[in-house]
Length: 631
Image 1 (cartoon, helix red, strand yellow):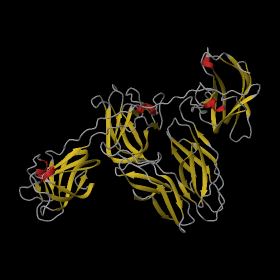
Image 2 (cartoon, one colour; image 1 turned 45 degrees about the vertical axis):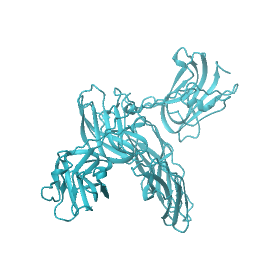
Image 3 (cartoon, helix red, strand yellow; image 1 turned 135 degrees about the horizontal axis):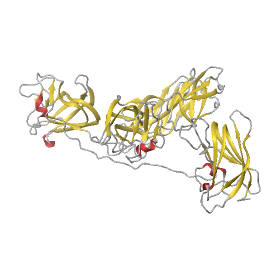
Image 4 (cartoon, helix red, strand yellow; image 1 turned 30 degrees about the horizontal axis):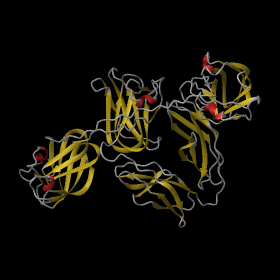
């Protein structure tokens, strides 16, 4: 087993080379919150209106009596009536009433909200509603949960009278979501301290918690919801029994994990016994895949602390995203035209539209029954497209496959590969990359930055730096490619590895590994699969046998830990092993630790051997020349 390789400096790292390893998968339980039917929170609240007729004043709309009513004055429309809830509330529904015995009529109206009673936004667009004595002369209007203080009904037409009329304006508070969208999802953080890791933030255990690096605020904890979801509420909890503290924080959201926008302003939230050591942060509904808590201050500890991070969406209605559009393709029916087609998505309610993206930016939206779009671009422009489906509730699918229309410029020469890629860490959770510019016969138009072989970000052709955000504990390998206007792409730059701060992390798991030989199913890949129940075995009589691991870029390695199955059925044995290595800029392997006999014994040391190394290498090789336990 590849064991741990440790770094000699403050960033101690480890590489585990396994002839057998174990795999631990963690997942939090699904927690549910009780859905609440929202009460009418407008009863008896203050009212106002654009005008009133005689005794039919605005106060009648919140007096709880359907027999009294407000009627606008004059004889002209539009007219409005509103209530002041007294404080900002989270609402999702209004109920409008006229006196029960009145004859049928239609009123055209919209519902509006305001934080200050001055600037109003639309909660529900204008529509015509039928007031019918057969249904109690009552109309119910629902909309996405929204925070507001003033609620206004703006009436533009009435078939029953030449004025606006309303008997009761009920405003219903929004309840909680029935599902915690962050339960069981992957959490990451800007940093962590010791055993207080991000995974504690949604393990369902209030006694465990995440804590960031100390004396390094601001710090963040975020949840990857797996796909874009409608969210409007975050609940944060700390362990029971903790002293009272206040944390200043805000909630942010992202659809790609890199670019975040604020959902709330920074505010101090109190965590105390009276409040159940919890804070609920509500905001207008938004669509996001990544939800982040950014903490800037904590009166109880010079670090960010969260025991449970819960994320909720709208409590009623549709919360299921459409399926991802499939088989995106393009043709060019005429010069400068790019016709996109894709297979339709499905949804539990209905797909209401598709968003078409070009080079990562929203280009246009089409209706839900349309599965084609024709874009216009100069023939000399390279452009990459993908499509997302959406429904009426704002749920959004993942990205379709991408397609690229390459420029027809006659340019077939790729830029040179970027060189001298290097990294620094200017702040906690930040990785700053720099590289030397590429050259091209017609000019470099951009650089693509890859993290762990996935495109992370594209920057302009005159930019040779990029700062990434990664949890402090994450090991990440970067490389960069250059491209030109014709879409020609360079080879990869050199790779660099950002080693996370968690002591003893295993750099070997999942990395490419080869052997000089193997027998049966005991292949080289068993040596770094993180399971001690599997192992690699070289061919009999084939000494020396070698096992070679490629890290992909230079890493500071302090030790190699080799493991065999600790089960007592494995007898004591001695293996003669040499450790070799190759730095990224070297042409061949050189000896790092001379050949030596190492004893593997399940009765002592857990059938494990640690070999001190102390080197910066990109490849590590073990050379076996004898084994008393096998031929």
